[in-house]
Image (cartoon, rainbow, N blue to C red; front, side, top):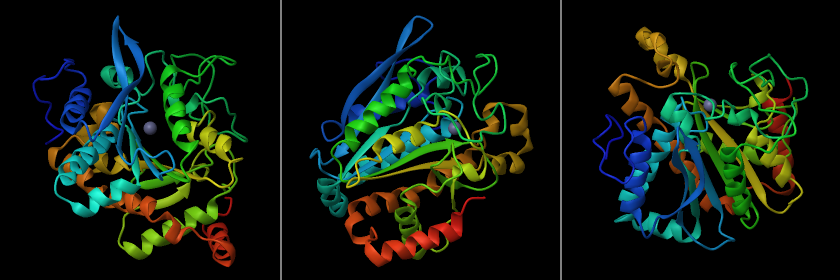
Length: 350
Ligand SMILES: [Zn+2]
Protein backbone atom coordinates (compact mmCIF):
# COMPACT_ATOMS: atom_id res chain seq x y z
CA UNK A 1 0.00 0.00 0.00
CA UNK A 2 1.43 3.40 -0.93
CA UNK A 3 0.80 6.63 0.91
CA UNK A 4 1.14 8.96 -2.07
CA UNK A 5 -0.51 10.02 -4.27
CA UNK A 6 -3.86 10.33 -2.51
CA UNK A 7 -6.33 7.74 -3.75
CA UNK A 8 -10.05 8.31 -4.30
CA UNK A 9 -12.04 8.14 -1.10
CA UNK A 10 -13.22 4.64 -0.39
CA UNK A 11 -13.86 4.75 3.32
CA UNK A 12 -16.41 6.31 5.62
CA UNK A 13 -14.39 9.49 5.75
CA UNK A 14 -14.20 11.59 2.57
CA UNK A 15 -12.04 14.68 2.76
CA UNK A 16 -9.65 15.49 -0.04
CA UNK A 17 -7.55 17.49 2.40
CA UNK A 18 -6.84 14.45 4.56
CA UNK A 19 -5.64 11.42 2.55
CA UNK A 20 -3.76 10.40 5.71
CA UNK A 21 -7.00 9.99 7.67
CA UNK A 22 -8.50 7.90 4.86
CA UNK A 23 -5.38 5.75 4.85
CA UNK A 24 -5.55 5.39 8.63
CA UNK A 25 -9.19 4.28 8.52
CA UNK A 26 -8.39 1.80 5.76
CA UNK A 27 -5.60 0.30 7.88
CA UNK A 28 -7.96 0.12 10.87
CA UNK A 29 -10.46 -1.88 8.82
CA UNK A 30 -7.78 -4.09 7.32
CA UNK A 31 -5.96 -4.68 10.61
CA UNK A 32 -8.95 -5.62 12.78
CA UNK A 33 -9.33 -7.55 15.00
CA UNK A 34 -5.56 -7.86 15.71
CA UNK A 35 -5.35 -4.08 15.44
CA UNK A 36 -7.52 -2.60 18.18
CA UNK A 37 -8.74 0.94 17.61
CA UNK A 38 -10.75 3.60 19.41
CA UNK A 39 -11.51 7.28 19.06
CA UNK A 40 -9.48 9.09 21.71
CA UNK A 41 -11.03 12.49 21.08
CA UNK A 42 -13.05 14.41 18.54
CA UNK A 43 -12.20 17.85 17.26
CA UNK A 44 -14.34 20.32 15.31
CA UNK A 45 -13.46 21.61 11.88
CA UNK A 46 -15.94 24.00 10.27
CA UNK A 47 -18.94 22.25 11.73
CA UNK A 48 -17.76 18.70 11.14
CA UNK A 49 -16.11 16.35 13.57
CA UNK A 50 -12.71 14.78 12.99
CA UNK A 51 -11.52 11.79 15.06
CA UNK A 52 -8.21 11.39 16.87
CA UNK A 53 -7.54 7.67 16.80
CA UNK A 54 -5.50 5.50 19.15
CA UNK A 55 -4.50 2.03 17.99
CA UNK A 56 -2.99 -0.96 19.73
CA UNK A 57 -1.23 -3.96 18.31
CA UNK A 58 0.25 -6.81 20.29
CA UNK A 59 0.04 -7.83 23.90
CA UNK A 60 -3.07 -6.60 25.75
CA UNK A 61 -1.41 -7.37 29.11
CA UNK A 62 -1.18 -4.10 31.02
CA UNK A 63 2.28 -5.03 32.34
CA UNK A 64 3.72 -5.56 28.83
CA UNK A 65 6.46 -3.13 27.71
CA UNK A 66 5.22 -0.50 25.28
CA UNK A 67 6.41 1.22 22.13
CA UNK A 68 4.38 4.40 21.60
CA UNK A 69 4.45 5.95 18.11
CA UNK A 70 2.98 9.41 17.42
CA UNK A 71 2.68 11.65 14.40
CA UNK A 72 0.87 14.72 13.16
CA UNK A 73 1.25 16.82 16.32
CA UNK A 74 2.05 19.68 13.97
CA UNK A 75 -0.45 19.55 11.12
CA UNK A 76 1.91 20.83 8.46
CA UNK A 77 4.41 18.02 9.15
CA UNK A 78 2.46 15.40 7.21
CA UNK A 79 5.51 13.22 6.71
CA UNK A 80 5.47 12.28 10.42
CA UNK A 81 1.95 10.86 10.12
CA UNK A 82 2.82 9.19 6.83
CA UNK A 83 5.84 7.54 8.42
CA UNK A 84 3.81 6.09 11.31
CA UNK A 85 1.16 4.86 8.84
CA UNK A 86 3.83 3.27 6.61
CA UNK A 87 5.24 1.49 9.64
CA UNK A 88 1.79 0.28 10.68
CA UNK A 89 1.15 -0.98 7.14
CA UNK A 90 4.45 -2.90 7.19
CA UNK A 91 3.66 -4.41 10.59
CA UNK A 92 0.21 -5.56 9.47
CA UNK A 93 1.60 -7.13 6.31
CA UNK A 94 4.44 -8.89 8.12
CA UNK A 95 2.23 -10.08 10.94
CA UNK A 96 0.55 -12.47 8.48
CA UNK A 97 3.67 -14.56 7.94
CA UNK A 98 6.54 -13.39 10.14
CA UNK A 99 6.66 -15.80 13.08
CA UNK A 100 9.30 -13.85 14.98
CA UNK A 101 7.12 -10.71 14.79
CA UNK A 102 4.06 -12.72 15.87
CA UNK A 103 5.98 -13.98 18.89
CA UNK A 104 7.43 -10.55 19.69
CA UNK A 105 3.95 -9.03 19.72
CA UNK A 106 2.84 -11.58 22.27
CA UNK A 107 5.25 -9.86 24.66
CA UNK A 108 5.18 -6.21 23.50
CA UNK A 109 2.37 -3.72 22.88
CA UNK A 110 2.67 -1.12 20.12
CA UNK A 111 0.45 1.87 20.75
CA UNK A 112 -0.04 4.35 17.92
CA UNK A 113 -1.50 7.81 17.58
CA UNK A 114 -0.65 8.53 13.94
CA UNK A 115 -2.64 11.74 13.51
CA UNK A 116 -3.00 13.82 16.65
CA UNK A 117 -3.94 17.10 14.99
CA UNK A 118 -6.31 16.36 12.08
CA UNK A 119 -7.72 19.89 11.88
CA UNK A 120 -4.20 21.36 11.58
CA UNK A 121 -3.36 18.81 8.89
CA UNK A 122 -6.59 19.43 6.96
CA UNK A 123 -5.86 23.16 6.91
CA UNK A 124 -2.10 22.87 6.34
CA UNK A 125 -1.31 24.51 9.69
CA UNK A 126 1.32 23.81 12.30
CA UNK A 127 -1.15 24.64 15.10
CA UNK A 128 -4.50 23.06 15.92
CA UNK A 129 -7.92 24.44 14.94
CA UNK A 130 -7.79 26.98 17.78
CA UNK A 131 -4.47 28.40 16.58
CA UNK A 132 -2.52 26.78 19.41
CA UNK A 133 0.82 25.00 18.99
CA UNK A 134 0.25 21.67 20.75
CA UNK A 135 3.97 21.26 21.47
CA UNK A 136 3.88 24.54 23.45
CA UNK A 137 0.62 23.81 25.25
CA UNK A 138 1.62 21.74 28.30
CA UNK A 139 1.51 23.55 31.68
CA UNK A 140 5.28 23.76 32.08
CA UNK A 141 7.52 26.82 31.71
CA UNK A 142 11.02 26.77 30.27
CA UNK A 143 13.95 27.89 32.36
CA UNK A 144 15.97 30.40 30.31
CA UNK A 145 13.64 30.13 27.31
CA UNK A 146 14.79 31.25 23.93
CA UNK A 147 14.73 32.45 21.30
CA UNK A 148 11.40 34.28 21.31
CA UNK A 149 8.76 33.65 19.89
CA UNK A 150 9.81 30.11 18.84
CA UNK A 151 10.03 29.18 22.52
CA UNK A 152 6.25 29.71 22.83
CA UNK A 153 4.35 32.91 23.69
CA UNK A 154 0.98 34.18 24.87
CA UNK A 155 0.56 37.14 22.51
CA UNK A 156 -2.11 35.65 20.29
CA UNK A 157 -2.98 33.02 17.75
CA UNK A 158 -1.93 35.27 14.85
CA UNK A 159 1.71 34.44 15.59
CA UNK A 160 2.99 30.83 15.33
CA UNK A 161 4.10 28.98 18.48
CA UNK A 162 1.15 30.36 20.50
CA UNK A 163 0.79 28.56 23.85
CA UNK A 164 -2.83 29.51 24.51
CA UNK A 165 -4.27 31.51 27.42
CA UNK A 166 -2.57 31.05 30.80
CA UNK A 167 -4.39 29.00 33.46
CA UNK A 168 -6.63 27.28 30.92
CA UNK A 169 -6.90 23.52 30.39
CA UNK A 170 -4.73 21.92 27.74
CA UNK A 171 -6.21 21.59 24.26
CA UNK A 172 -8.29 18.51 23.44
CA UNK A 173 -5.51 16.97 21.33
CA UNK A 174 -2.83 17.61 23.96
CA UNK A 175 -5.05 16.09 26.65
CA UNK A 176 -5.69 13.11 24.38
CA UNK A 177 -2.02 12.25 23.86
CA UNK A 178 -1.28 12.82 27.57
CA UNK A 179 -4.10 10.51 28.65
CA UNK A 180 -3.02 7.86 26.12
CA UNK A 181 0.60 7.99 27.31
CA UNK A 182 -0.31 8.02 31.00
CA UNK A 183 -2.69 5.10 30.61
CA UNK A 184 0.24 3.07 29.27
CA UNK A 185 2.79 4.46 31.73
CA UNK A 186 0.60 3.53 34.68
CA UNK A 187 1.29 -0.18 34.27
CA UNK A 188 4.08 -0.72 31.71
CA UNK A 189 7.49 -1.50 33.25
CA UNK A 190 9.22 0.03 30.23
CA UNK A 191 7.88 2.55 27.69
CA UNK A 192 9.70 4.01 24.72
CA UNK A 193 7.97 6.77 22.76
CA UNK A 194 8.82 8.14 19.34
CA UNK A 195 7.05 11.31 18.22
CA UNK A 196 7.68 12.00 14.52
CA UNK A 197 8.27 15.60 13.38
CA UNK A 198 10.02 17.41 10.53
CA UNK A 199 11.32 20.87 9.82
CA UNK A 200 14.67 21.31 11.53
CA UNK A 201 18.18 21.12 10.08
CA UNK A 202 20.04 19.16 7.45
CA UNK A 203 20.24 15.94 9.44
CA UNK A 204 17.81 13.51 11.00
CA UNK A 205 17.91 14.02 14.73
CA UNK A 206 16.62 12.09 17.71
CA UNK A 207 15.77 14.55 20.46
CA UNK A 208 14.96 13.80 24.05
CA UNK A 209 14.09 15.88 27.14
CA UNK A 210 14.69 18.35 28.37
CA UNK A 211 13.27 20.86 25.92
CA UNK A 212 12.68 23.45 28.61
CA UNK A 213 15.82 23.40 30.76
CA UNK A 214 19.57 23.03 30.37
CA UNK A 215 19.78 19.81 32.30
CA UNK A 216 20.45 16.20 31.44
CA UNK A 217 17.37 14.12 32.03
CA UNK A 218 17.36 11.74 34.98
CA UNK A 219 17.52 8.73 32.62
CA UNK A 220 20.56 9.95 30.69
CA UNK A 221 22.38 6.68 31.52
CA UNK A 222 19.52 4.60 30.10
CA UNK A 223 19.38 6.75 26.96
CA UNK A 224 23.13 6.50 26.52
CA UNK A 225 22.89 2.72 26.84
CA UNK A 226 20.15 2.69 24.18
CA UNK A 227 22.26 4.85 21.88
CA UNK A 228 25.37 2.65 22.33
CA UNK A 229 23.22 -0.39 21.59
CA UNK A 230 22.04 1.27 18.39
CA UNK A 231 25.53 2.40 17.40
CA UNK A 232 26.94 -1.08 17.91
CA UNK A 233 24.06 -2.81 16.13
CA UNK A 234 23.90 -0.28 13.27
CA UNK A 235 27.21 1.60 13.09
CA UNK A 236 26.31 3.44 9.88
CA UNK A 237 23.02 4.92 11.09
CA UNK A 238 22.34 8.54 10.04
CA UNK A 239 20.99 10.01 13.29
CA UNK A 240 22.24 12.61 15.71
CA UNK A 241 21.06 11.86 19.28
CA UNK A 242 20.89 14.95 21.48
CA UNK A 243 18.84 16.75 24.12
CA UNK A 244 16.47 19.24 22.54
CA UNK A 245 17.77 22.08 24.73
CA UNK A 246 21.03 22.02 22.79
CA UNK A 247 19.14 23.86 20.04
CA UNK A 248 16.42 25.92 21.71
CA UNK A 249 14.45 25.81 24.92
CA UNK A 250 10.69 25.85 24.70
CA UNK A 251 7.75 26.31 27.02
CA UNK A 252 5.00 23.76 27.20
CA UNK A 253 6.73 20.71 25.70
CA UNK A 254 4.37 17.73 26.07
CA UNK A 255 7.16 15.18 26.47
CA UNK A 256 8.95 17.22 29.15
CA UNK A 257 5.62 17.42 30.94
CA UNK A 258 4.87 13.70 30.69
CA UNK A 259 8.42 12.74 31.61
CA UNK A 260 8.40 14.92 34.75
CA UNK A 261 5.03 13.57 35.82
CA UNK A 262 6.29 10.03 35.44
CA UNK A 263 9.55 10.53 37.36
CA UNK A 264 8.20 9.56 40.82
CA UNK A 265 7.47 6.06 39.47
CA UNK A 266 11.07 5.04 39.95
CA UNK A 267 10.69 1.40 39.02
CA UNK A 268 9.04 2.10 35.67
CA UNK A 269 11.21 3.48 32.89
CA UNK A 270 9.93 6.02 30.37
CA UNK A 271 12.16 7.24 27.53
CA UNK A 272 10.41 9.77 25.27
CA UNK A 273 12.16 10.40 21.94
CA UNK A 274 11.33 12.80 19.12
CA UNK A 275 12.38 12.07 15.56
CA UNK A 276 13.08 15.42 13.91
CA UNK A 277 13.47 14.70 10.20
CA UNK A 278 15.97 17.08 8.60
CA UNK A 279 13.73 18.79 6.07
CA UNK A 280 16.27 21.45 5.05
CA UNK A 281 18.04 18.73 3.11
CA UNK A 282 14.93 18.18 0.97
CA UNK A 283 14.76 21.94 0.39
CA UNK A 284 18.45 22.12 -0.53
CA UNK A 285 18.05 19.35 -3.09
CA UNK A 286 14.93 20.89 -4.56
CA UNK A 287 14.82 24.66 -4.15
CA UNK A 288 11.31 24.79 -5.58
CA UNK A 289 10.20 23.51 -2.17
CA UNK A 290 10.94 26.98 -0.84
CA UNK A 291 7.96 28.30 -2.74
CA UNK A 292 5.47 26.27 -0.75
CA UNK A 293 4.89 26.18 3.01
CA UNK A 294 4.29 22.43 2.82
CA UNK A 295 7.62 22.05 1.02
CA UNK A 296 9.51 23.40 4.02
CA UNK A 297 8.36 20.44 6.10
CA UNK A 298 7.74 17.57 3.68
CA UNK A 299 9.61 15.90 0.83
CA UNK A 300 7.66 16.81 -2.32
CA UNK A 301 9.54 14.82 -4.97
CA UNK A 302 8.12 11.25 -5.11
CA UNK A 303 11.43 9.38 -4.97
CA UNK A 304 12.59 11.47 -2.00
CA UNK A 305 9.26 10.88 -0.27
CA UNK A 306 9.66 7.12 -0.73
CA UNK A 307 13.25 7.25 0.42
CA UNK A 308 12.19 9.09 3.58
CA UNK A 309 9.56 6.48 4.42
CA UNK A 310 12.13 3.72 3.81
CA UNK A 311 14.98 5.44 5.63
CA UNK A 312 13.51 5.17 9.12
CA UNK A 313 12.37 1.55 9.02
CA UNK A 314 15.67 0.45 10.52
CA UNK A 315 15.20 2.79 13.47
CA UNK A 316 11.61 1.72 14.06
CA UNK A 317 12.50 -1.95 13.87
CA UNK A 318 15.41 -1.41 16.26
CA UNK A 319 13.21 0.44 18.76
CA UNK A 320 10.63 -2.35 18.68
CA UNK A 321 13.33 -4.94 19.42
CA UNK A 322 14.91 -2.72 22.07
CA UNK A 323 11.53 -2.58 23.84
CA UNK A 324 11.17 -6.36 23.64
CA UNK A 325 14.68 -6.94 25.02
CA UNK A 326 14.74 -4.01 27.44
CA UNK A 327 15.83 -6.13 30.38
CA UNK A 328 18.86 -7.36 28.39
CA UNK A 329 20.42 -3.93 27.86
CA UNK A 330 19.09 -1.59 30.54
CA UNK A 331 22.17 -0.79 32.65
CA UNK A 332 22.41 -1.36 36.41
CA UNK A 333 25.09 -0.80 39.05
CA UNK A 334 28.58 -0.11 37.66
CA UNK A 335 27.28 -0.30 34.10
CA UNK A 336 24.80 2.44 34.83
CA UNK A 337 27.55 4.59 36.31
CA UNK A 338 29.64 4.01 33.19
CA UNK A 339 26.77 5.11 30.95
CA UNK A 340 26.03 8.12 33.15
CA UNK A 341 29.64 9.26 32.66
CA UNK A 342 29.32 8.64 28.92
CA UNK A 343 26.10 10.66 28.77
CA UNK A 344 27.67 13.58 30.64
CA UNK A 345 30.68 13.54 28.34
CA UNK A 346 28.52 13.41 25.23
CA UNK A 347 25.66 15.69 26.18
CA UNK A 348 26.95 17.74 29.11
CA UNK A 349 25.13 21.03 29.33
CA UNK A 350 26.12 23.45 26.61
ZN1 LIG B 1 6.92 19.47 14.74
